[in-house]
Image 1 (cartoon, rainbow, N blue to C red):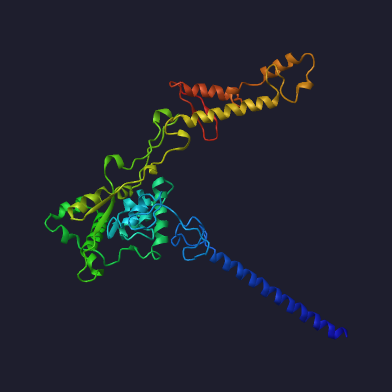
Image 2: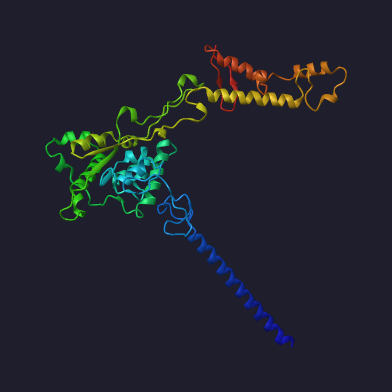
Length: 395
């Protein structure tokens, strides 16, 4: 009996574990199906998100679902009262151009404009030149604000290229020869005024202008091709946060080092040569909040950092004095009961024995003080060996 009961119990346990596993898997599948079906504000991909604030799937129709009520346009279509400029342009079918070639200056300093073109209801075809990608790779190294913007632009392009069919990268053969555009100018002028990275960007934009009609059906309208460059007007020029004055710092500050590839992100040369090449420009303005401002008003008060450090040291010393019981007239918290009738004299002695807070926590020995006085005098020369021994000055 014992030999037959053992295999029976083992088989029952195995069957029970399999049943529990199957039930658990069925429960997980049901939960996943509910999660996929109930599409909320953040359930689907952000590109497929329709901005439905009611939490109802766009294709899912319910019997008692409330219909949105709002002002209707001329065609009888409901329009959102607080739609904004983007929804008005969507309704009117407005677009900046058919094909937009993006310069590196727009990717670095006007990234919100690129995000606007990446939206699903836009119709612009965005072409990113290979030289713009090379510029982002050169600028994204480091911890400066320019490097952070270059890395942000690279992340946006990595997420869009290959997923959004309207965001494309320049093909290897999509360029024209530079000499075909400026054949009437001398070679030395072209070599000195146009760097190689400017030439590659202009050649890419010119190729898009000449071959924009290749994908259009015969008899169709010619696509409108523009080169998007950062606006060069004075009121929208990209500014850098003012650095603190050198006179306000106790030590001389190092000279600010500019990235050697930073002129590539200005768009000035690209804009000038695009006009010479006959390419239509689209001025893109940088957002108003793009100028970096130091925290806590450091740009307004250059000595704010130094003052805050002195205030912290002073407050720390006062706190230690309160804990140590050296405050005159009070005796300190927690040590009041240890004093006798001559407590005032003891407090005075302790206060006199304790060095003042302004002299520092460590008292320098007399030899060091004498050495510092000798060094402070410009007429005396002090020579010290490597192991710290002082040599007498030559008289």
